[in-house]
Length: 354
Image (cartoon, rainbow, N blue to C red; front, side):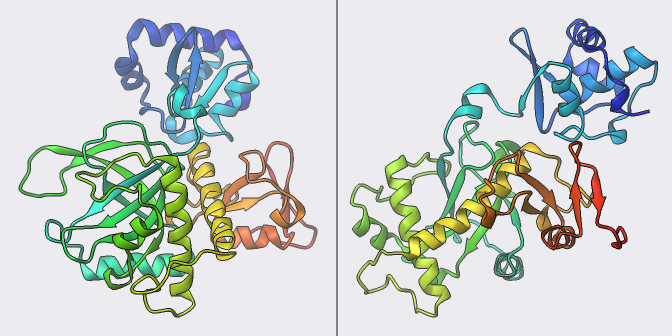
């Protein structure tokens, strides 16, 4: 049995009615499903957990309940099946956030309050330098909402004379509550998952003074994490930051300490890389976090693959992208296999499946 057996919209409507009569918590508990992670089914102004609705609708139509581990909830599973039946399925965020442009937020690291272990810090740096995804959750101050996957996150090093921008990444989750980073505080704190794309050593950070010289309107200090940056300030900061990181990669010794601030074509090159990272964040927000070919679910190494190559004019869209492990991404780029209209893998003649 599979989602292909779900062909009757009436069964979905019955599942929705059952959801309404039982209530969300009891409905999910009764049929063994967790809260939606990727997609909502919207109906009559209400949002429903799409995977749970699909599983129960399958039970209503066929007499067999699809268990949560028997199918996926993304665009290869429940979301696709429900959309093919004419239902409105949207990414797991509210309508305003789903349609807005990506935003930029700051987070803070004060080494006087939180000691980041040297080995953990260097391990994250190694992941970034190796070109892999470098995931790490971070406290977002007191902000409880407003961040969605794909938003830009800047980490500022504070609490000492060495103040400035030290890391950047993109959010890969909405805000969630977790135990407080300060072990002496019993309450929970809001966090966001971030895929980091740059992490500098404190001696190499982009000094706050350089940021303000470049943009006098930039705040002199942040009192807490989670502040939404003004779009113009964020654009100026991104240009300066990418130039700074680029110069460090070319061997400069902290290019913005005692040197004029320079801008140029390097910003375009850095912007392109950011674009690719944003493409990956977009796919992670829309698909289940697994390789479409082998099912590998290690988020840290999943890559964003263009179905139509970027060099051939392929766009960084959900329709033109799929998540793959590095091996299958490379194999796809070398034309070892392709996909049919249902995303089924078609191996090239003479190539064994792996």
